[in-house]
Every structure is written in structure tokens, then in C-alpha cells.
Image 1 (cartoon, rainbow, N blue to C red):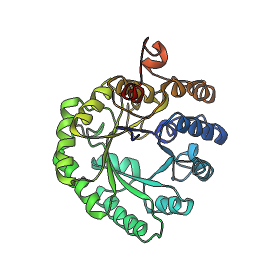
Image 2: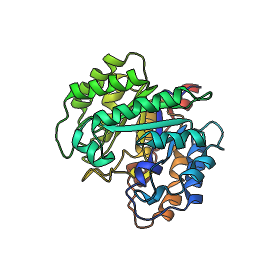
Image 3: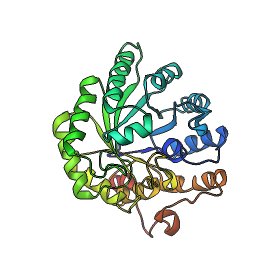
Length: 311
């Protein structure tokens, strides 16, 4: 059966990038294997950036190659530039997630160049990807699309303009993130409706942070707009190191529970997902893991969406 919504794990990249404690490669791969076995079909396993900038990803090659051995798993990695994309191509990653910021200030702080320079680099990257005999999916990401901790409100017209520019340059799909957790459901509807109206049938995913407690409400707002792919992280790990206060992706366990309890099939085994938390806590003993489902457990009589449909 085909899942109705895809929840994509980003904790290994977005979650770990701001944590000083290095998670051993073996633990990262165990996390990936167990989460894939729990039904998570796509995992952003690392970022191809210089280790001197983010030492957590010094083992990016080993993690990528190990993840690629897992059957039926979509292995994705974040890249800030063409050099990172070249590394992803060499390793054989399934999906390359490029990111630029709609906010000029955030883009300068995050990747140290202007938005137009980032866009020009994406055009080069897209051409490089098109030249491959066996090419990965190329995803264009628009950080700070729903607000910026440096500039405040981000004009919807700017979001649409750069979304269209990424598509015209060769993006196979887009992702629209609330990088710093400023969004609310009304804003989510405005931005996603505007983007979806301009990009046709191209897949558009969402990435929400729960910094101010609106993450799951924002997910539902995007779901109502027709979005069917969402980023989340085990235990709610996450936060952009270049955006003050941007902590906490939406909790993978809670997002999966909410959708499954609504009858929306995610393909995820919630018990297996919860069983993974001790591994993560052991690897990061000083890091707080979040999640209502982990605290309260599944309700009595809970039936997953797929099982309910088959009954």
C-alpha cells in the first residue's frame, strides 16, 4: 500500500548540526537502520560541509555509504553549494537537498553569500546533476521562507520569486522551511498556496520548527493546502546554528501519531519508532529529547491508519 503522507527524518543533519557532542558513526548508522525498519522511508543522513565548520559531519562519507546499503531507504543529504553536490554525486546519494535563504541577511550568515550568488550556484549544480547518467533527485530549499530572526517578516512575493527561480533552474522538488519557528497556520496557508499556485505539479515539502509551539498546527495547515511530505526529527532535535532561538524540529513521533490517529497513513510503526529513543538518548545523554507520545504512550485501543483501513 502507498503511504498518504511521507515523514522525512532530518535529525541526523538538522538535529546534530548544533550539538557539540559527537555521535559515533556506528550509532548514527544504528539510528538510520532502526528508523528505516520502523517505516521511515526517507532520511537526511548528513551534510556535505567542511568538517572545520561542522565537526559533527566529519564522517559524512561513511554515514552515506552505510545508509545506502539499507534496502528501500531514500538517502538524502544537505548541500550548501556545488562542491557539496559534487561530493554527493561521488558517493551516490539518492537526493541532494540544496538550501538557500529567502532572507538576504540569513543567507549571508549561513552560507556567506548573497541570494543571487546562491541561485547562480544552484543553476551550476542543476546542470552538473543533469549530466549524470544515473542522477539523484535535486531538491531546492528556501530557508526562512516563513520568517527570519534577523529581518522579521519575509515577503511572500520573495518566497514565490525564489521558488520559481529554483524550479526554472532545474529543481525536481522544493522544500519550504520555517527555519526559525516564526510561522502560524494562517501564514503557512498564505505562503504554501502562493508557492503551489506557481510551481504546478512539482512536489513541495514542508519543514517546521516547534520553537514557539505551533509546529504541528502548521503541519496541518500545510496538509490542508495539499502538501504531502514533511520533515521531522526523532525527539524533536534540531535548530539552525546561524539563527538565534531556532530550536526544535517537530517531533517525529508526535507528528506520526497525530496523522495516524486522524486516519492518515504514514507507513510508520509507532512502537518501533518509540523503541529507538533509548539509543538516541544513550548517544546524547546531556541532550533533552521532547515528545508527548513518548511521555504518555499510545492511547488504549489505538489503531494505526493502515490497520484500520484493512479491518
